Length: 247
Image 1 (cartoon, helix red, strand yellow):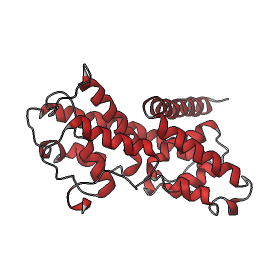
Image 2 (spheres, one colour):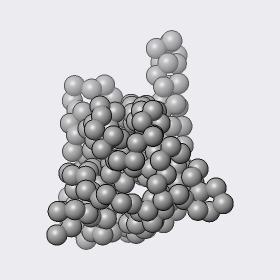
Image 3 (cartoon, helix red, strand yellow):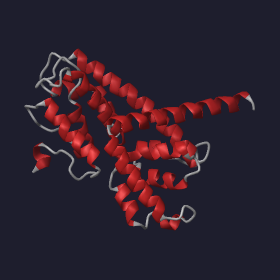
Image 4 (cartoon, rainbow, N blue to C red):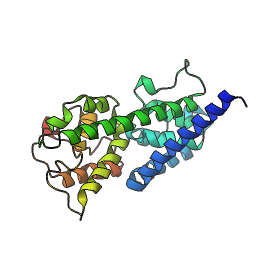
C-alpha cells in the first residue's frame, strides 16, 4: 500500500467517524426522529429487492421515506457509512438531495457511495464552521433584543445557503443552547445575552423561505414547538408556521 492509499484510507476513516458521530448525537438528543426514520427505512428495505432498482421507488414505503424531506439526509448517509455497497441508500440520497454541489457525479473519483460520504463530510465541516460563526456574531450583538440584528448578517445568509438538509445540525445547536439557558429548568423569556436562541428564525426561513415576523417570543415554548415537529416524523406537515405564511 503506497502513501496515497494510506492517506485515502485515513480520510475515509475520518469521514465515517464524523458521520457516525453526527448520527449518535442525533440519536441521543432526538431519539424519536432517528427511530421514526429507521422504522420507515426498514419497511422500505423489506418491500423492495436490493438487486432490482425498478422496485426502489415504486412502493408506498419509499413515498413515506421521501415525505420526511431533506432533513433525513444525515441518517441516509449513515446507512452508507455502515455499508458502502448499499445502492438503495445512494438512490434515496440522490432523490432527496437538491444541491448539485453535494450530488455524486461522473467527474468525481470513486463510486457514488464513497463520493456521497466525502461530500457529506465536507458539508458537515462547513456547517459546523458556519454555525460557530453565527453563534460568535450573535454573542457580539447580544445586547440587542430584536431578531433583525441576528438575522441580517452574512453569517446567517451562509447558513441559509446550505438549504433544508442542515436542519438536523441546526436542531442540535438549538437544543444545546436551550439546555445551556435552562439552568434550573427555566428559560428566560428574552434569552438575550445568554447564547443564540434565534435558531427558530433560521429554521422558519429554511422551510418557508421567510422569517417569522414574530415580535414577542417565549424562547422555551418556541423551542418545544420545533422539537415536537422534528421528532414527530411528519415531514413538512406540521412545521411551525408564522406571519403571512401561516394564513
